[in-house]
Length: 254
Image 1 (cartoon, rainbow, N blue to C red):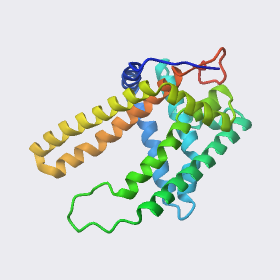
Image 2 (spheres, helix red, strand yellow):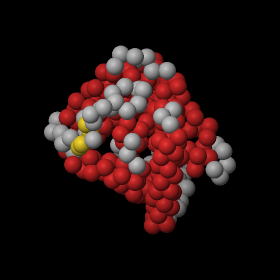
Image 3 (spheres, rainbow, N blue to C red):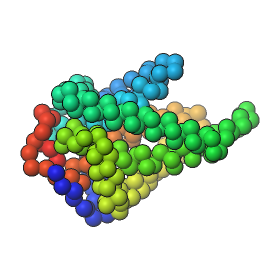
């Protein structure tokens, strides 16, 4: 395995490939993403341990969605079982994926707790006032950034390259930082796409039926865009690392 350093313009290609691959298998990729979201929603309702279980499954679910994109990119129809790819590659890699999940859960809890401790609990908003991003949420997102960088490629490195959890976190962070320009362009393109689609839907919905109609149109569209975004993550990994041989049954390692 070796790290590939790519040009910043590669970020645009990642977005394009994600959108194009999504439209190759829109029902399958959207369905798998919605299935993942439904599982997260159900698990999060379990008292006390729900959030912990949800966090444990994040790396495995991320890998499952990446494997689904890999299959769609190769012209195959991704079945629901692809979401379990992390647990079908042997006990060692399944255990490593759960270790990643435990690290992610711990880091997320610490980041959220620190944000609450530093910013304090915001006062309740007056009834009827528009929802705003509070300071605690914003600070929690900032504190989660190092976690996102370390975990961006980590599940795929564990699954497709057999890297240990600790090394996968290190290699992921190095890859993201070495290809910072491409990732920055990638993030900016997705932000612009979300804002552009949201603005158009807000305008059209407002003209048709007011704010309620606009919100009704935005929610499903935002979920579809999120599914497209998840389909593009695989390509950021594929172009950032290279290997000599195939490792798993999902196809050749990038």
